[in-house]
Length: 230
Image (tube, rainbow, N blue to C red; front, side, top):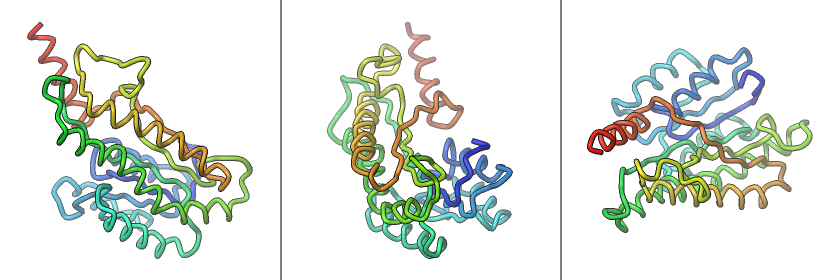
């Protein structure tokens, strides 16, 4: 990441977990981005306290309200980003916001599938669509050749749990709604890569591995409990 010199970056779900960690790492870079946009559903909520405090110390960090399931919220955030970058576009969009409900095939239901998919699958699609003009502008203005994060990129946070071939840890944590939502996100990423490559925009999905976040800790807690019952 030390070589990831980007002019501007936006990270969804930045109030805690991986999103907050990414924001901190960008701030620590020898040559940090000119603009770091950290989004959260509730900027005034208690869970956003740390990122708000960071923004008070770093003038290049802007905290924005953004709910990936709300098109109006996404549009408003995109307008604020445009106001800050002043015609320079957005170099890097990281679709990190996500949720997981610890479900099984027995208790999975339509409501859970819809809620998880709206955040994990539809959300990144809508955010990417709304910020596409700014990503295009960054790509057009860049002197970089080929595709790269320094030019213009969409990075979608996925998981190996989405792998149809691997289906990791199925016996311990089935979680079908989460797996399906991330598998669908992988296909969206593939479609984005085909559609946006001619604009000079890199599109990829990544698996960060297990991280000690609230979501990650909750999953480990469920696995530990199930193992004790076995």
